[in-house]
Image (cartoon, rainbow, N blue to C red; front, side, top):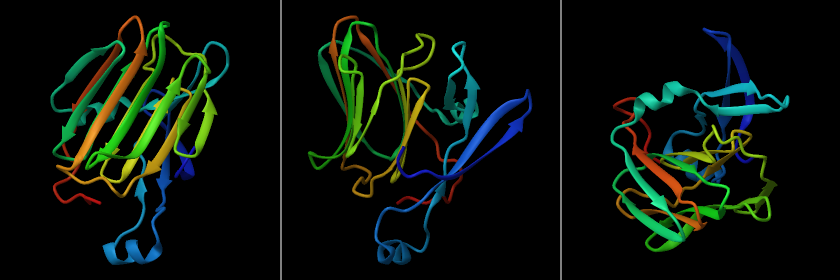
Length: 204
């Protein structure tokens, strides 16, 4: 779902099927012409087949080498907010069967500029104007993994659905990550700041 185009895959060592895609611009051409660049490669994704024969997808484990510290919270009918000094973040949620809903939002100067809501009772996910049916969850897989890298947001839900977004309003020091979980059982929320992949990476 979302801003993801022309995917290609290859077999990595160990016969792992790795998928790459192109993340196009969704801002006006005049804006990216002024910025001097357009588009980005996605993070690599590992494809598989589960016991029921369904296609599965997760971020390739190599991306975990970018993690820097770990911040972990257990949420139960609770909202937490983290001010982001830089826009390189990994977010992971592990819901329980008693979790009724969870949501991740990005706020800029207190205003929501991007959100993803998982309604487990209705089995629906909503991201902006896009919605899709939630898959049956494998307890061994994270409920949600999300990577923020400047204007790019890549999220995989339940190891089955991926949605890629562009959000140009975010800016370091003025952006807040908000995570909410409703229901019992304690949803595990983990966040990792990420180091840049190169010293001269793009920042918009």
